[in-house]
Image (cartoon, rainbow, N blue to C red; front, side, top):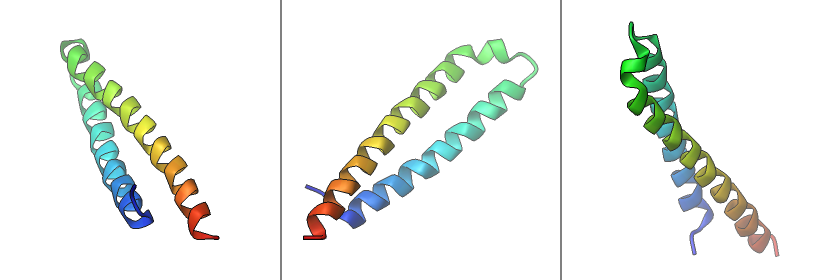
Length: 71
């Protein structure tokens, strides 16, 4: 499927994107009228959740790949 290096790079890219989304959320929440940005905040928070799921799946796959390589 994917080798360890590919999985680690995918995780690194996701972590970078998550950091950027977290900064966007902080920015919107700090605005004078955060309710005005409710849909953008909702979307950003849903994306964070999706990336969290993706990261967990990558971690699970890394465990499998590393187990296969240890034999």
